[in-house]
Image (cartoon, rainbow over all chains, first blue to last red; front, side):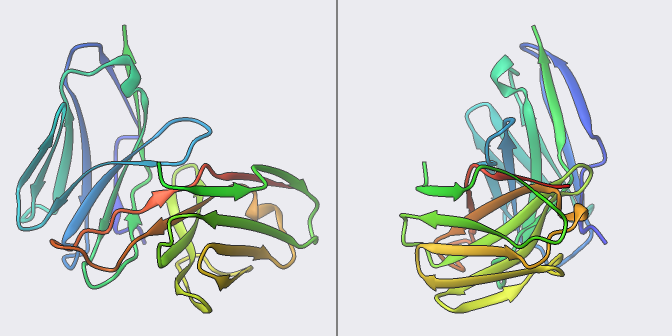
Length: 112
Length: 117
């Protein structure tokens, strides 16, 4: 039973516009959330994270929002660039455990 | 980039044969993980290690075993490969269980594409 769900398998966005990726989780014990980016034939790379004590974390063009009551987080990319075309994975963990639970991923395509 | 290598990068094998995948790190990180990536499933944890000779099962461990005799090496073995084990396998490492704020970034290797015919 997947505890982290990314219900949109793909997203297409025009260059310069905002990309919004969504992620839902079911385990209320999760208190740390991460986003990873993956290019074809490469391993995932860490992008941004957020602790449950915060509701927003920003790093350059990337912002993650956390809504604990809804068990929902989102990743905003503004503005979207062609190099952002990749698969994005949402992941979650409990700080008492070092295992990560991953969503199925969302493939983002940025159109010129 | 974290110093993580995986070998081989690609392998084709036949059903019933044993296969060993190797993960090597130069970061001296304590924790190491093996994941498989399949369409529609994201990354699923197979086994992990929290120290030399200390390993435990993940969510999809059936048919797999692991060994860690040195900090830098984590081996994944398919005792008798099956077609359902055709996948991309990723090794990951992390420094510690808990940093300030409960952080637990894992750093991934480049992956091994395994095909079982």
